[in-house]
Length: 261
Image (cartoon, rainbow, N blue to C red; front, side, top):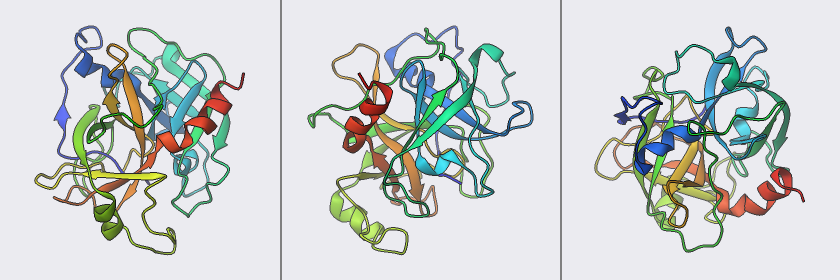
């Protein structure tokens, strides 16, 4: 399930020693759990904290292939194997998939999770900004997650980051033509594709739903989520991009759910 990071930078940053803007991407990540018992749950998809009650993720991350729905959210983690902190563990009260998401169709692959209690926001958990307008510089963006560190490899224990480059619409259309799950092929208005043409830098299996983000140019030390990791072909190959749901296309819908008034 999913699609996240390979050929990445492993950070040794302690939660108590985060000191500059470029390290704040670690504070945006949420890890999703499948199962009612947090100690025994499967943890693999990612998400972005939007507010005290909402997490942004991919539509296909709302349930597994065995139809187990996402039930748990963890925050403030740098390692997958960190001890479970009950003050950073939340139960999912409701799942709101985009009304036009229809699996296995890959369009509109975006969803919101509402937690049963307020997410603790502090210096270790920072909400991400939504994109507004079209003037943002998103030619390069960073993705984070706990996914595979190479194709058919194993999940990362340390939270990973990779910086990748935006491909043109023509390039994306060539890589992702029409198929049974994307009848129109790549859709520029609702999808993005990013990768690296010179190095094996990509997102990979294991942590879909995580953020593709850029440093906010207007708010100090905040990030803007431009994409939600959606899917790809074989990950980690030079010149092979992955697909991300274009968040700006869904900002009005997100705002109507998270901030209805």
